Length: 168
Image (cartoon, rainbow, N blue to C red):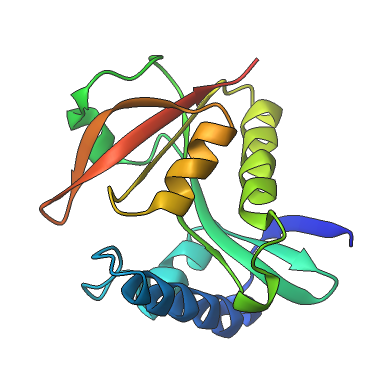
């Protein structure tokens, strides 16, 4: 299939929210605390799209995945317990989720590679992200794609593992 990574539009919000709800349920079923505190929610998705941060991976007309992508827009990263690999501009992404019907196809990795391309197209060599300690799937993807563990950051009072990838 030919997948497309594009900026989300308002009409995409119901499908995006459905994908995130699936992911929230999967995290709970996996015994994770991640995304079990009312975040993310539909208002966050609406803000992402309104601010131009929301991006979707599409399979034809169907939305297969979602993420929020920002440049230099994560205040929590300034207070890392550890050290980032680079200083200066960075791309950060949050809320990576794949539709249940599309799981097992490597689409999360594909989406992260698209985010790397997004950064490179803007002359940015750093991509940063974080995840819960109990999210083995995302931790494995970070390892597979060459991210480096940099320390811990805190969101809503909870520690998260922070990673950075320096692009060529």
